[in-house]
Amino acid sequence: MRKIINATYMTLDGDITNMQDWHFHYFGEEARQAAAAQLSGSDALIMGRKTYEAFADAWPQRAGTDEFADRMNSIQKYVVSSTLRDPAWTNTSVVSGDVVAEVRDLKAGPGGNILQYGFGPVTRLLLDNGLLDELRIWLHPVLSGKAAPSELLYRDGLQTAFTLNGTEVHSTGMVILSYSPRRPAQG
Image (cartoon, rainbow, N blue to C red; front, top):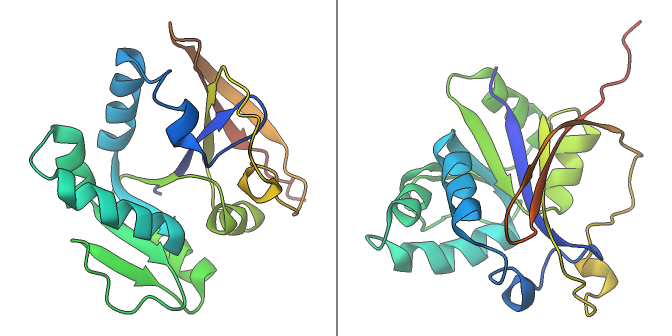
């Protein structure tokens, strides 16, 4: 069975959106290698419409500039959206209708890991339905100091407990924390 892995970049105060202000100061060679390994270890991306639109605007313009950009552009992409009809970005399929059932089918199908960037409604849907297998928080050693409530990791929802899988500490002070959601005991 395929695993769905979420990778979320975050500041110490929970900002997951204003990356232009804090992310690149801490994204050194170790982070580049970790990001490349994470992407190359996956054969699909899953995302919501907002992430899709941001990525589809940026990555195709970087085609041919490096292996990471080429991988981003060539990998299979799944967009969870009830309004997107004709995605222009290469290798993109829209997941609509019964999203939970469609994602379960994707997980049960052949292939490698499915990677998701960012934390939003799609992540919460995956968590609430037992579909997210791993959460990787790329914790940056900075307080953003300017995130609005909607730009923080926090979301109303079911309480979810996690088990720590491991940590990776970078010389820039960034730490990648890997967690697996704890599944309720069956009985």
